[in-house]
Length: 72
Image 1 (cartoon, helix red, strand yellow):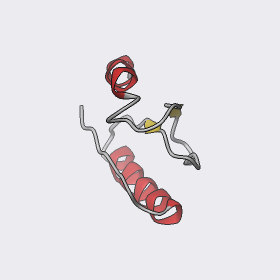
Image 2 (cartoon, helix red, strand yellow; image 1 turned 90 degrees about the vertical axis):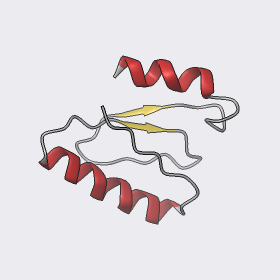
Image 3 (cartoon, rainbow, N blue to C red; image 1 turned 45 degrees about the horizontal axis):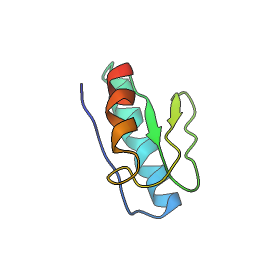
């Protein structure tokens, strides 16, 4: 399993990078799921998304992130 984390980018740049990386991974036969906790959720065509609401992953969502990754 590969996990790619993107932080701090503006929404348009983050969406473009996520779409590019998801496309590369799918072209190589990998399964892709977007775990998203952004204020403005990302929607990528053909990529399932799991919304992690409730704040920062390193502070408030740390307990939710690990189980979400293992469920995938």
